[in-house]
Length: 219
Image (cartoon, rainbow, N blue to C red; front, side, top):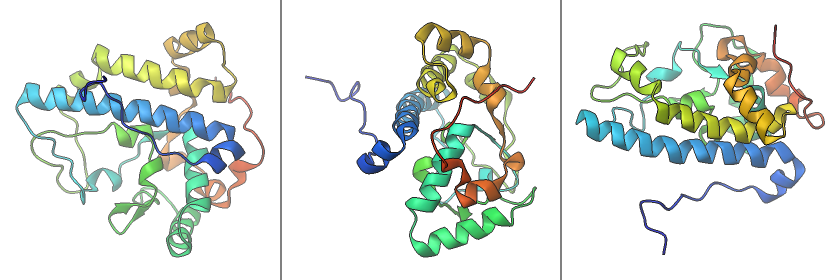
């Protein structure tokens, strides 16, 4: 019998869409690996510090003004979710904010203090946590203790497992090649700041025209 401690949660499944978009299953699995691993790391860190997790439902300080990294594969997921999973009213509101977005405005996916694409939010959003006191105002300053925690070997191992799941999207399929790409920082090289994203392209669904080609690392 699998113990409750070691049992993985079930990831969301969209059978028809996963069959239509082969990259979607890989992205959902990567998010699932990240969520399960991050949950374990956060619980352990909260216990070690003897401080509760400050992030709670209704808090969106990290969505205001801040700009987090997002990868091409994640943008495919965001475009799909906005255009094909949101109801008509929510979709119209988000698409308008995408089309008119200009930094340093708040995240265009923020809808009335709630993430409109929460199931498909990027890795940088899924792994950002604060302990003790919640963020204040419109900034989310990272403490040295937070920085050290994020650089831990446990975090790197989790990042490696998530990256290995995502790298075939970029045409890197063999296991040894994926290991090398991760060690060389490939995933960091293909990400961009959310303030740099062409949200109009994401809004119009242009990213969904055919199977994505391998991304090229900018020199």
